[in-house]
Each structure stands twice: as C-alpha cells, then as structure tokens.
Image 1 (cartoon, rainbow, N blue to C red):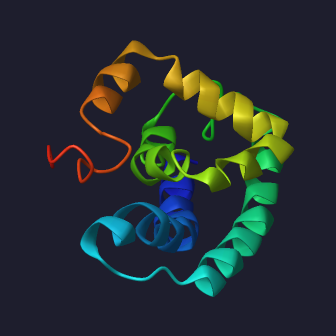
Image 2 (cartoon, rainbow, N blue to C red; image 1 turned 180 degrees about the vertical axis):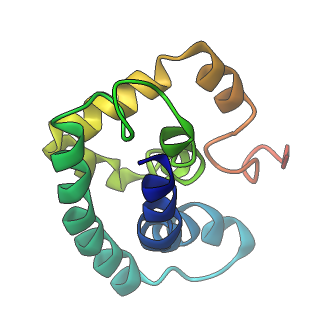
Length: 129
C-alpha cells in the first residue's frame, strides 16, 4: 500500500498542486505573471483527486494504514507549500484529509522539517534554502 500512495503522490497529486504553488508562491517572486486559468483548472482537478484521498482516509488514519509511513511523508513537501496558499481552504471540504494533514503537522519531526521550509520558499526573506 505504501508504494501505491507514493505513486499517487508523484503522478497525480504533485502534478496537480505544482502549478498552484508555482503560480501563487514562486511566480510573483521571480517576476512571472500567474496563469489563473491553470490554477483554477488545477483546483478543480484537485477536488476530484481529494475525493479518493477522503475515501481512503475514512477507513484508516494514514494512507497505508494506521501508522505513518513513507506514503504520508512523500506528500509533505508540495502539500506544505500548497497549504500556504489561499487555496488551502479546498481541504476543508474533506474532513478525513484535513485530519490526516493536521496529524502530520502535529508530529515533532514534521515540525522540525517544516521550520526549514519557509512558506515563500525563502524568496520573501531572501533566505532561500
């Protein structure tokens, strides 16, 4: 099950949220004009994708079962940045996804990693990792 969700993240979720992150967070700092149509399309695709996550997480606390695994952690990097955008509210419609995300954020190890991941990729502060 771990490998399935790692693949889902790499081939489904990340390609959907990457345009949102790049257009909303990084684009303004590097001087590109955002593509709102692409962002809107990505959000609609994300909603459909999150339905699958919601179904899975309604029967287990984490993606591969009731334990944290690489399946969950592989989602963290792009989700962390997506959740720093105004579009993060999309997750509110999926209570199990929201609970999963909050459970990940509550982990001390995730908090430690997140401390080195500024929500603006460091562009705003000039502290680009």
